Structures are given as C-alpha cells and as structure tokens.
Length: 576
Image (cartoon, rainbow, N blue to C red):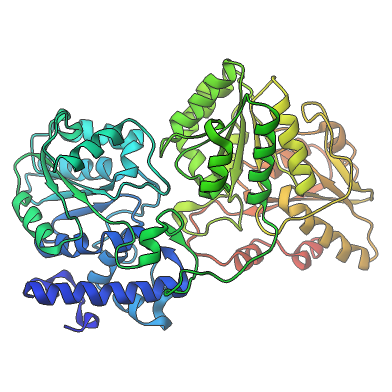
C-alpha cells in the first residue's frame, strides 16, 4: 500500500506479512530521505522501525498505552499515527518535533527527551489503570543504554510488584549514544549469547517473566512475540536484539556518529564541511592537555562523550582518565565528589539540559561538602538545543542559587580557559564553568586572575548608563553600547564574570547612574539580573533586567526568541 494512505495503526492491521514488509521498506526509504535532508536521530529510529510496526499492529493504541523512553526512536510511531506527511513531503518536514509530544497526537502520551523515564511513567499509567478497574495493556519501550539510569531501575523494581499487566520492551542494540558502560551490560551480553536462556537474568531477578527475540529486526518474530505477551496478567520483559542504524550501511558501521547526525549524503554519509572554531573542541583539547600534565585529572561524563568533544580518538588518547559512567548523571556528580575528596581533580562535562538530572547530588554530595569539583556545562543558553525537552537556559537559576557553588560565565576563549585553569587548580569550592555557545570569540586582556576573590570586569568606563552583559551576551552589551555612543551617550560596559554572587563594590558605584541594563543568556527568573535589581532597589537608578523567558520554548529560532525578549542592540539602545 501507499504509505501516505496510513493515517492510523488501524490502516495496517489487515495487511498480509508481505505487505507489512513492503510498508517497512517504504517507510525506511522515506525516513532516510528526511534524515539526510534535515538531520535527526538516525540510528535509533532505523533500528526500531520493524519493532514499532509490530507494536502498533498487535496492540491497540491509544487505548493500549505505549510509552517511549527518550523518544528519539519515535519517528516511525509518528508515521503510523497520523503524521506520515511530515516524513514523506519535504514541505512538511518541520511539522513535527523529534520527540513524542501530546500536543501533536493522542498517541503521544508524554513529552519526553531525557532518558530512563519510560518504565516509571508507564508504571504510573498501569497503577492508574488498576485503581480504575480498567484492563488495557501498558507497554514501556526502553533502550539498553537507558537501563543504566537509576530511574530505570527504580521503575523496574516498583512495577514488578503490582501483579498486573505490565510489558517492558527492551531495545538492545548494544549501544547507548556511545558504547555502554556498567556491569549490567555483561548480563545483557550473556543473555544474547545464550539466546535468552542464561542465568542469572537481570529481569527475572526483579520479578519479570522474560521473552527473548534473537532477531529484533525480523517483523514476523516481533509480531509473534508481542502477540504472546499481549494481555499478560503480570510483568514481562520482551528483550529485542536489534541493529542500530538498520538499513543505512554508514549508520550500521558508524553507530556512535549516526546516533544523532546533522544533514548528510545518504550514499556516503558525508556532511557539509565546517571548519569554524568550536568551543567544544576547545574544551576537549584543553582537557587532553590538562590530563597529560597531571595524571590526577579526570574527565567524567554521563553517556554523552561526543557532546563534550570526546569521540573515540580523544577517548583513546585520554585512557583511564576519561570516565563515562553511562546514562547516570547522579553517579557522575557523586563520584566526582568522592574523587575530589580522594585528592584527584575531577571535571564533570555535561550538556546543561542533563546536569539538572543530578540537582540533589550537586547540592548534597558536592556543595554541602565543599568538594572542589569543576562542572563544565555545554549547549547552554539560547543557542543550545531548541527542543522543549532539551533547553539549556535554566542552568543558571537552578545551580547558581545552590549555596557554596561558584558559577562562572566566560565571555571568550581566553577567559574560558583561564576559568578552567583556575577552577581545576583550587581546592576551596565547587565551580561551574558555562561554555559559551556559538562561534568562538577572542578578546585581548589579562585573564589570569583568582576568581575566588576578584570582582566584575569593567570592560569600558562610562557614565549615567551601565550595561552588564553576562557570558556570551557581553558581545551584545558592546554592540548596544556602540549604538548608544552614536546617540551621544557614554555607557559603561561590565562583564560580571559570576552568575552566583554580586560584586557589591562595583554595583555601589552605579547607584547614582540613571540606568542599569542587565543581559543574560538564561531564564530571567532566578538569574543574575534580578539579584542586581534587588540589590540596587533602594537607589534611584532604574534597572532593566533582560534575559530569556521561564517557559518551555519548543523548536524556536534563536534570533526570533531574542527579539521577542528585547535582546537586540536596537531594542536595548531604545531603553535610554
């Protein structure tokens, strides 16, 4: 059948197996074409294609509840649930997000973009069903990489005690974003090698019945397995051995690179060349130099080595000083605290959107214990990731308000390296260094300072008007000042350096100014500007606090969001 005629799972339920296989082939072709043109999660979606078709053939969503972990394998689910045009018509490629989204369809139960959540979410659906006396199936889909997260264990541990229908589909492609890490994977390997017959069995030990599918990309095997567990009266795990990137040779070979990939040539896998300088490479190269200088330096990440610039070659170069704990941010942060206590120099590198998963460890295990851990956040601010599940502009309000953590916002490459150097050399406190987004900025000056004691940097002296531009927004402050100079004003420009504390000596000098404007690349609520406004609240100076909104913006265009917040040089100049 023409896949464009598929508007709901009901449209595939009467098809013969050969027709279903052709549907899979046609969807794979369409999926590769869109991914090559637009980029996206390549490997996860291609590898789980047949399993998704089998799920929707056997189960009766949305009456039956299917919850996708991370949901970066949900493209085929979207194709089957009324959104096929977004994958077959280039004019509509942007119509849907890359993650499940209840605003798009009743088949999408949750907005999910972080990992290890599906079993816990589905357990809630199962408990609600049981309390209401209903009888539909509840299915949690989770990848082997996601099993390393603590929430996945907590969900598995609890859901097996309900004594009612609960189906966990484990998509085991032997990969997380990068290779898996943790002892759990030895058991998964044993299960695959024994055709699911080996003991011990992690899932059975938690109270689950267990069914193994050796070829998790074989449609007939998948259909048979799902039919066997549909309507089960207790908890059961269906363990699928799948091929990540199935059907796209370059993705099958380069599984890590094609977990998520920008636009590429489908035949060769090559992407448009980009030789521009990158803060991520700058960070990775700096860390390699630091590791070579001192064997006590270690870089820790939670399952996202590529996102912090550590692909296979850099990981090999770093050796045992590079530690990937798997998708387990709590472990990464608490382990770093222990390493610092033991006399090492731990650096935790994480995208800003993921560090929030370890808030309690930041507060309890690190800050209260005053351990000198360096945290480096990446993809922070408006130019980080733009999906509502991956926003990077809530890190400043979240972390900078934890007592005892010094939060630094570098404005350029030179200041970035100086802050890293200082933080890794001191033993007084935990420090966050926020990696700027966008093109690398270079700035002359002496950045070799003691950040435990220095204050704000006055970039240019002025009078009556002061613009405080934090981090990446210092450049915006300078651009705004240039426009004010054209109006005959002489504004002061300040680099605050810190997002977690105030330089009251510098701020006191602004009390007789007419206007102070604060610019920050993060949510305004709980940010630096509000603290400055509160401190100057008993003076005549008017303070304008500009930053990003406290909202889950989704798939926004950075320039448009900035303009809507008044964060353009023209709009800032108009304030005076």
